[in-house]
Amino acid sequence: MLMVLGSLFGLVEFSTVLDREVGGVYILYVVLSVTVTVLTVAVAYDDLPPNTYMEMESDKEIRRWWRIRKYFDSISWEDVKESYWISPVEHRDFFFVTLSRTFYYMGISTQGFFLYFLHDIIKAQDPAEIVSLLAIVSQSAGTLTCIPIGIWSDKSGQRKQYVYASCFLLALGYFSFVMCTSVDQIFMLVLVLGAANGAYLTMDTSMAIDCLPDPDAAARFLGVWGVGSFVGTAMGPMVGGALLFFLGRCERDGHSNEIEDEQIYSRIGYMAVFFLAGIYFIASAYVLRGVKERKNVAIES
Image: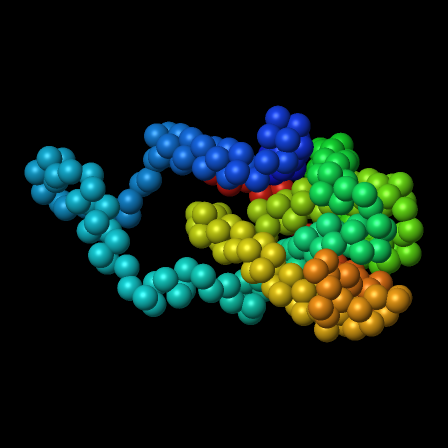
């Protein structure tokens, strides 16, 4: 819920108060990042392992930064490697939940091509403005579905069925993008996709918590799980961009963009990108087939 609301807040600010001024967006990002970092450092409490403290009573007089330095000096590169490793055998369920998240973000990251799709295929007059409105519509729809889906899931004890339904709608929606011929059709499709997106994000987080290998090491495991989104977001455009360039840059639909100032890509190229995104969503659901459903898991603070 907070993730969706945060995205919605940023999009509304970008489209209204900041009037789509990129410089203002970066200033807002820096201000918010510094603010939340200061707040986190101020209120968070790090309980360092007992062996990092000196047993002598005089340890109380040693500055905190020295104790923290001593703790980090004890960390080896092997420890760093192990902290990022999730065993597909020992922690099978959590591994596949993380893999599912990676596939999901590989699919959802193809949203980065919407601006060009609206320009090249839909022939929108102001693609940038429409993309901003589409993002607001999508996040708003996700806000409306994430809480009810979470409540129903808690009552039924089921998670995967909502993920399957969400991924099916997302895949079907992305397959359908290339058949759209107007902005109104895009808006209707994005409304459905936004609702499915909100449901997936709720269940994704819930399953990650349910499948934690060790609740006492929740920060480490959820940190690695979070890295899946960064990996997926990076890999999706890398593969999709290459597909669009090699399949869409050729002369099709009466356009040849090899030397034009405004590059125009064909429907074939976008079809390949969105079809691949749909495959990613299907893979995101498929890898969860062997994950065991669990009742709600409480993490002690």
